[in-house]
Structure formats: structure tokens, C-alpha cells
Length: 373
Image 1 (tube, rainbow, N blue to C red):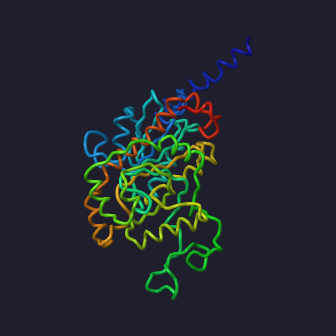
Image 2: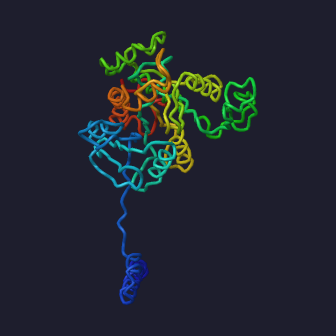
Image 3: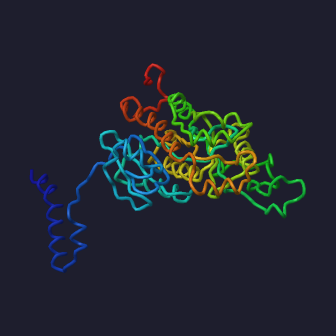
């Protein structure tokens, strides 16, 4: 009994003595160190919705990528966040929403900061990137939604100005560690290309392929200009298609051709360029590092991009004229953020609403009979 009392009382007596000594010296730091600290259990997050920008306020005005998630998913619990934008959470559903800021550097650093945040348990969380993008008119129409399997980086490369390239080269842009454009003797990618869990991409696509997407006279007028582009003239639809991420906002037929070839080059012909954006390789790179640290599961990542504009002009319009027109406001902005929510929320609601099914095993790992209809 005496031994037990000593075991219990000695730490308490030592703490009191240190506090008293600190108080006598007027040493507030000493007092803070020795005061007992409340231990809070991290909040388990079921789904993280990753958006990149918001136009103005988080509610009640022109919607950017985050606003519809904030309003419709009732992400009302606010958590201060040192990065671009505070975090918002729904404790009933376990859905957490974030806004990273535009560009690879901001997306990578924001996701890394969240992944290391001790307030949250992200070990079982699914990650949904839901943002707008430019789409290749060869593949889809404005307002459409594409699930990516491959993320290809547009920035990691060598470049020589086109006015100085050797005769016979189609471009001055070529892979690091190679000697010419599209050199078959390329090194293994070290950030130039990432493949997401293909089974998760397929699951998300199959779950959402028949989601009805918004159409409007504005979209109809825009896509009617794309004569000889059958897919660009269709009403908005859901498809699978890969993402090219680069910090430079490019536009035009020649760069669109390059984008297609660059994606095929790095994916060994398996990928198909559909969406052009900025952030997704940075986001996924951070998630890979966090996976190695045991903080997240990179096999639970999905990337959804929706078409706010096309990546090249319609016939008869110059690249610069089309780009400057888009600069004044994307014809498909409202439709694309709505499409991102309609398609993405079907996945988010399925995962968060059946957490007993999906917490420990991904949809791809479950027997067919256990998957929700």
C-alpha cells in the first residue's frame, strides 16, 4: 500500500513543487510546462473534399469550387487553419472540406499541413479532389465530368525555346534525363506521372456514370461552335479521362496536341488527356509522403475534374482570342461547379453514409454482395 501511495503521490508532489518554484521566480513558462494538459482524441474523418478556390464568400454569392460543398454538405464546424483557407467539418457525417489555393505549391503544402494536423485522424479517410478544368474537345463537352486514373505533371521537364530547337524537332519541351522530345529511353517517373488506384477510379465512375448533369442555353451555344468535334457537341456527361497538371495556363490547338502526346508518353500509351488543371500532381505527391508516414491511405484518393472551358478554340477562332474571352469568365463555370458537386457528392454520400462498410475496406476490396447499390 505504501509503495502504491508513493507511486501515485510522487509525480503530483513534484509537479506542485515545480509550479511553486516557477511562480516564485515569476516564470510563466515553467508553470505552463508543468500544468496538466487535457488529451483530446483526434476527430475521425471519413472523407476529405479537396477544392482549390472560392470566388468570394463561402456562402450566398457566386459559387467557386467550395461553396456548394459548404452549403449542401452542412460543413458548419470551423477549424482555424494556417494555410489559405480555414477547414470546415460536418461532425454528423465525418466530411471535411478544404480550399488549398490555386497552384501546385499551394495544394501540396495545404494537403501536407492537413495530413500532419493532430486534430484529425485521417488514417481511414477517403480523399476526393473536386475541381474545374479545361477539357479537350476531342473527348468531352463543356460541363462534363471526368474521373482520372493518371495524373501527369506538365512542369517537370527540359525546355528550349521553339526558335532555337534543332531541325526536325516538333517541340523544345522534353523529359529530364533524355536527349530529344518523346525519347523512348526515358527514366522512371519521379514526379512526372502518378497512377491513382485504378479500382477506386472505376468504382467512382460506375457509381456516377448516369448522374444527370446541368445543361443550359449558354452551354449549348458554346458547344455548337465545335463543328467536327462530336464529343464536344454532346450534352454534359460523365466519363473517365486523365489529368495534366501544370502551373502555366496554356491554350490552343498545338498545345492541346502536345498535351495529348505528353500524357500518352508518360503513361506508355495507357492514359488519355482529358482535363487540364494545376494542382493534382502536387496534391497527390503530398499524399504519397503522408502515406509513407502512416497518416493517410493513398489508395483512397479520387480525382474528379469538370469542364468549365475547352483547352482549344473552336474552328475559325484564334487561340489568343479564345483565351482572352475565357479570361473574362468561363462559360461553363456555374455548370462545372454544379457538376462537381452532383457527381462528387454521390461518392461522398455513399462512403460517409455507409461507414460501417467502407471504413476498413475500400469499395474495390469488398465482395460484390457487400457493395451498396
